[in-house]
Structures are given as structure tokens and as C-alpha cells.
Image (tube, rainbow, N blue to C red; front, side, top):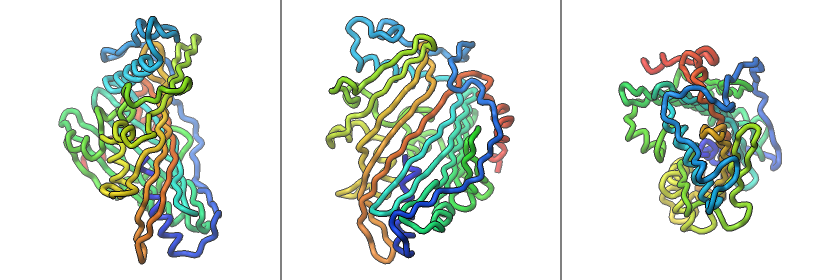
Length: 364
């Protein structure tokens, strides 16, 4: 998760420029909005009418949790993944919220980050909001967390106007963002008043965001029979709850060798992270993934309930303060996205009702 990368360089600089005690840790004391908000049918099995042609689970491959005929677990896993991906990508109306975070560490210093993201797709117009806030620092004085938050808290909102085939992207960082994590929808709040606004064509958006297929891709890693781990009995696990009709698919990517890393992450995921970390082009120590595991929950009608990705990477970072330091960086992160295909959850009117979010900002 590239939101975490900047933590390493900034907390390291602060550590070098200040006196600190190794092992000191300070958590944030964010004000939390505890007002309860209804989340509609997020995560629920939706059986109503849809405005698109849904991709169904093939009963000749897997049916009621059982593999059919000579179907292998790998074939079933690829099929369930492709069905979930197709329905998220093709839906004319779909909404999601994401939550999670992670840590980044180099030597005795590091930091943690939490985030809350939402997405609403309504008749091919799409709104996405990402709010990320530093949640902890390690190896620094108690007062450092405020400094780091004022430098690294970040928020982005995006709107795709299908009538103009244009993406509007607004970003804001640091103290101007006034980021907060809240317990209910939309899970993160931010001020975008002083944010920078860009307009991008689809081709340019796909390039700068390292998009593989769609703005709603489950992941920009390569999921194929050659990239999924499948040597141990528990590499691929498919569970089925007959009462709810819910499949739970767990699997990970092959990342043991350089060839495997190149195939699974080399086209989009790794270049994205290397650019964010400033390690692109390094002959040695450029950022590499060493773990990327996934859990997909998908109902037997083909509509996904959730997608969770857990990842880790390491890199050699060169941080310049008064002199250049060579540091080993490492990160762990996990995020979960929960979906709703109920039209009641996907309109922009509902977005304004629940979160006070409108599209007026693209006019400025």
C-alpha cells in the first residue's frame, strides 16, 4: 500500500534531527464520530433486479461448495476470482467502503497508518474518496506524532464524469487535510478546501494510477494459473456456508523467486510502489513485494461480499538529511473492501444523505 511509504523517510528524518528514545510509541487521540449510520445492504446478499448482465458462477466448475468433475482447486479459485472481478467491474451501480492500515519500519523508527475509503458508482459515474491518517510512531518522542501527521496525513477524492470521459482528481496533504478517522460511513473525513485539482483523460488516469483493467479492479497484480501459489495443500482454501450461500476463497501469489515477482507484480503493482518509494531505477534494493495474500467472499449468485488483501514489501531507501543514509525499509499492511449492489446504496443522493458529499467541487 503506497500510502504507507512516505512514513519511512519522514520519520527517519525527524529521528535524525531530534533526540529520541528507541521504543517510545505514541498513539493518536483522534476525535471519533460515534454517531450510528445505516450501511444499507453492504456485505449482504443482494437478490433484487440489476441493471447489468451479471456473470454467474459456473455450476459445471463448482456447485454448492463442491468441485465438479475434474475441476482443480486452482481452476475453481481462478473462476471465483474472475466472477467477482467481472461483476465489480461491469456493474452499473455498485458501492464499497474500505478500511485497514499498516506499519512501515526502518531500523529503530517507524510508523503506522489507518485509512477509510469509499467508492460509489452510479450509472457509470464514479466517486472515490480516500482518507489516510498517521496512527502511531515508534522510536520518536511523544510530540513527534503531531509533526508527522502534519506532514503526512493525506486525502484524495476522484470523480469520473462518464458524459465527458474525464477524471477529476483532488489531493491534499498535511495539516491542511485535517484528516480524521471515524467509526461510521464514510469512515474518514477531510477538508479539501486547499487541495489541488487535476483533470485527466482515462488513458492518463490509467497511466498515473497504474490501473490494470478498471477503476474498480480488485487488485492490479496479475492473477493467473502461473502466479497463484499451489504447491501445498493449504495454499488455496475454498470454504462454503450453505446457509448463506457464501464462498470464502483464500490464496496468495508466488513471490519466492525474482521471476515469480516479475510475473505477478512487475507490470503494474511493483512499478506503482517503486515510484511512490523513490526506489524506481535503483540497481539494487528497489522495492519488492515478498507477500501478497487475498481473501474473497463471494455469494453463490456471483456477487462479491468483500475483498481483503494483505501485503508486505521491503526496499533499500536512500534518505538525504545533511548526508545520504542507506536504510532498509519494511512494511506490512492489510485492507478490506466491502461491497453493495443494492441501488439504494449507490446513488449520489444517498452519498449526500449519509456523508454530506456532493460533486460541487468539480466546478471549481
